[in-house]
Image (cartoon, rainbow, N blue to C red):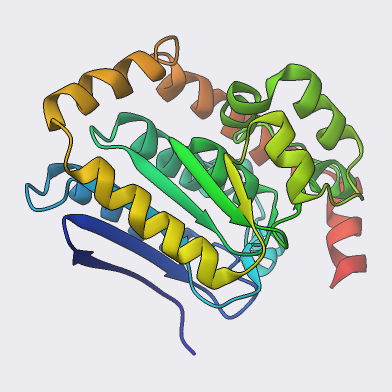
Length: 249
């Protein structure tokens, strides 16, 4: 299957789905489409609630596109690539509608950041998480603020430093990343649909105001995530990282 970002609307719910054949990794073009789709959903009067999901039934998101990381050859390209994740997170943050996360499988790196930037996130028992960035010589700089906001600095530092370990969906639920964990994908989908449809019946003005309250203190993220993207964009050029990426390839 070819990569895509698509949106469907059902019962007032805007389902935004992304897919990439390489474990739902996200190259720059998909990141741009995803940020645009989220922004458009926020402006669409037919959409009351947004659900973020990915295609397939295994991996939610493997994070940054490995092939694109390898191709980065200067700091400007590096900054622009990592700004892709920053723009998606900021689109989710500023979207005036609640975003529900539907995490069907493993989330790695930027995928953890996407899950953390949702307003309410549900998962299956297979949705383990890992921040692998330090293992290749960079770090979860861009997604770090969103993850820290959900699981605290202690949780972030634990998974960022333990970069080779997958942490279970139960651990993620205990830390507050996931609100509920389900045994099967069908149970997850039923719960996401039911919860979203209930929310869609609420006062949209009240939900918009409540979302602003939830995200208080993040008003500087446009600048903060830009600065973080610049850090990652420089580190990805280091000899250590270039060697690691070649070894993995």
